[in-house]
Image (cartoon, rainbow, N blue to C red; front, side):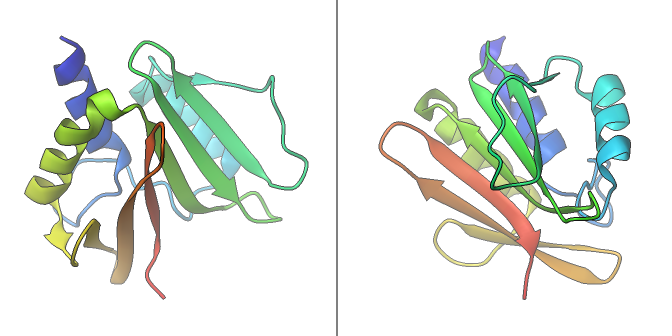
Length: 138
């Protein structure tokens, strides 16, 4: 059951291709993200306990599946990029999903299009966890 949950969450998080049904959050206002998350991602909870004053962001957590999602926001509270953090127990499921749903851009990189704009997805392995970052490809 845990693997299925991770696959579903990864699929919902990682951007959306033009034909995908996944939610695309980059460009959304903070309030829209919070409202959408309450409906579409009920297992992820908004965490307001720990605040880093150097960044404007929303932090959602699923402690059962060890997933954290950060929505980084502009000064106007518009989402500019997303960073997902996972435990290594989720690595193969996330990579399988990325390979299946997005175009490869080289080692640990994928791309997708949304409304005529190209977005870049990068997987980065850290010592105790790995991240998936999503942003507009510049």
